[in-house]
Amino acid sequence: MQFVKASTFEEWRTVCRGLLARHVPPSGVVFGDTDRSPSLFDATDDSEALPPPADSKSPVVFRIPKSFLQAAERIACHTAPDRWERLYRTLWRMTHGEPRLLEVTTDDDVHRLVMMEKAVRRDAHKMKAFVRFRKVESPEGEHFVAWHRPEFRIVRLTAPFFARRFPSMCWTILTPSESVHWDLQQLNYGPGAAASEAPQGDELEDLWKTYYGSIFNPARIKLKMMTQEMPTRHWPTLPETDIIPDLLADAPRRVAEMIARQEGFATSAADFLPQTLTFDALRAAAAGCKGCDLHEHATQTVFGEGPVDSGLMLIGEQPGDQEDLVGRPFVGPAGKILDEALAKVGISRDRIYVTNSVKHFKYNLSGKRRLHSNPDVREVTACKPWVEAEIELVQPQVIVCLGATAARQIIGPEFRVTKHRAVPQKTRHCENTIGTWHPSAILRQPSQTRRNEMLLELASDLRLAAQLTGFGE
Image (cartoon, rainbow, N blue to C red; front, side, top):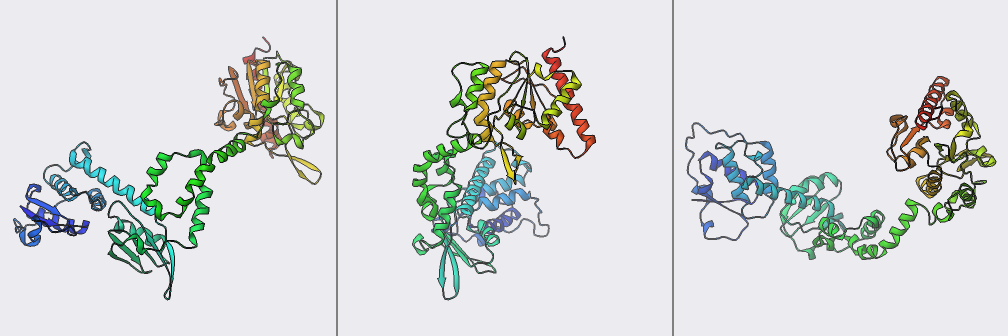
């Protein structure tokens, strides 16, 4: 029986080379850590105890997968007493008839090593994430010191990362088992240190707290996951953990504020819907809608119009400048394009119900000009109850969404005009919902050729909608 010592990957690798060269099987060797207290087995000097190579004139060449050596370097950082024996036994088996052993994930040795490597990876990741340096002033200049308590001996594994990340500052990381110092040129390793030897705070603390408070998302609080990802043993060295109780206590208020900001305003169109679902009641109620801020600047509510028994419903984005002044949908330049497309199909406007996703004109002033501005998600969401009420009233056989805003509101957020145009889809609102160009998009095309193409495509989509509705039968 051979008794050998190893505390680092390099020591283990050197020892294993000798063991393999001397054909020492795993059953013939016992590993121990060099920094462990001497035991009865440690009385034997390893280099002297090893038998000579079987044939020094013909050294045996072993081919070891690079991936195994990379994993072994990480596993060497684990503190499990059996890591050296597991590694050597696996190495021996790969070089003695089981070259593809690492692919057998159910093997006890392989599984155990994989678990150890994962644990070391997690610990190294947390060290990279949770080390917090404190600035120390000295006659030699600024020095940054951090204390960290990793689960395993990963200082040598992670130190190169910090050297690359902070190459221009002198820093030291202290851990209970080992320390490392970067002097702007090289890494120097030393013994471990107690937490009391590290500085307890500096002016950077407030910066960390401010940063953490700004990225803290109260809508995603999962305490179990939080403590799993940020183990409490690291909290004493993390300045931001001081403010976690206050952030958690304030989370409900911030969540309510986020909901109001992201899903709509404190009110929406739902607060103004009439008790009775009739066209006149809806139109009258919508005239006084203050479900979002757009009513403050628009001239009036532009509600839908047309026969409620049409069977075909067109939904645009929002009224434009002329629609806002007149109070009717699609009466401006975009309306003329729509009429032109309808004429190509032979459909009269008075046969269809036409409305918009948003009932108030949103614009930006440029001098005296009111320039169209797209409604945002909150405004579209706040106005959605009006459209849904109109759909419920009209009960259309086919809905044509003019433009992406309407299509995403009715069909879904994944809708893309260039990808899904002219494809009838079943939605919860209607058996056949078609998305197509908004007439304004055609107007904005600089090329007359392209405008003509898009106009024909719009007409083609309206023709399809008419056919599905049964117009002309």
